[in-house]
Image (cartoon, rainbow over all chains, first blue to last red; front, side, top):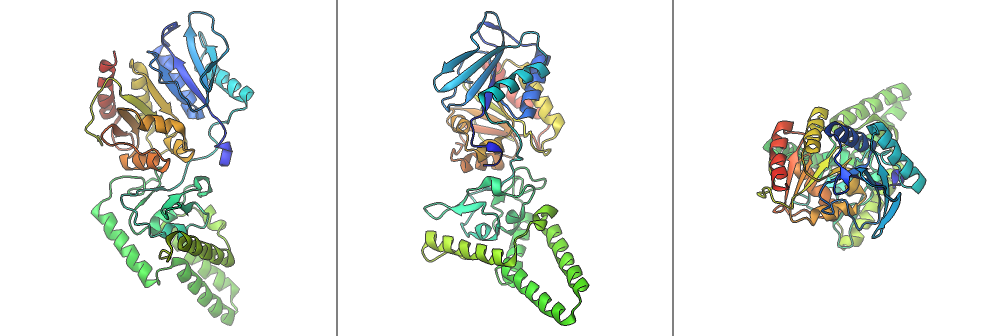
Length: 285
Length: 121
């Protein structure tokens, strides 16, 4: 995965339980802000209830104003614990300690990837596979049982919500999208009307937006090759792309990296084969 | 704003999502909520980004989903619910309530959380 997302992470515990003094409220808040904005997960522990304990084998940096000397390292099950006294340290200095632990232990540097990917609302999804067919970047796949899944989140193009625009059921969310219902807000009657209209448009286009685009491209190519007016062809192409980009709210860089016609055809064929393999007779693509 | 009928319980686990990699949650709301959480006596988990944890299928999500009671302070309940589900750890709506920092003012969210501090004393 991008940014080494599959590597172990360093979690942080702000320990304020037995044997440690409570942090000053301002210090605690500042430290929490700084750690979170750097991408570290933080657990505040005051009562030793085990909130910081985890069996997931990750490493833990335990920060506190410890009353007694502590070992620098300990083991809690499979979790390696690094203990540091932050008495008298600023938030910046404490974050520096955490960064040092992470670096020395060879753990993943947090951040580096804006987690942008589709999330499927299975209460709405009808498993039509249009998203799998539409997505050019192999974000989607199907389970052994033939259920649509998001399988390659980090293949998704940041800020591109195009697949949610083609979903006829408003079943695809992007939690970091600006507008509803794609951001996960409740679906309103207007949203459903808009989607119904989209399906109608899709039907008018022949049910396959790529085919429609290919047909349009072929017609344009034919027309312009006859006219031998390359500038005009380019202008028309740019106009169509700009309109599509605007309609679907697709970032310019996604358009800039669109695959060739041959790649699109290969992708559509592959999606068809995948769908046929998992569904027997094949889902409608 | 509550997805579940569950109210304050002594074991309620609080999870705060910072949504650190995007600007869709108003900064003043997430700061105010974090400051209130920080000033309380509550133990809590603060995640930089629940989306990232979902993409990684992070085991901590399983632990949260398995809690007898949890309050997740993040964004739209529908998004949070399916993020957990997408990671393979579906939430039980009877046990989890989700507070939405994209829509609700900080004061309203804090009002929901702080009574938990009294139960945990």
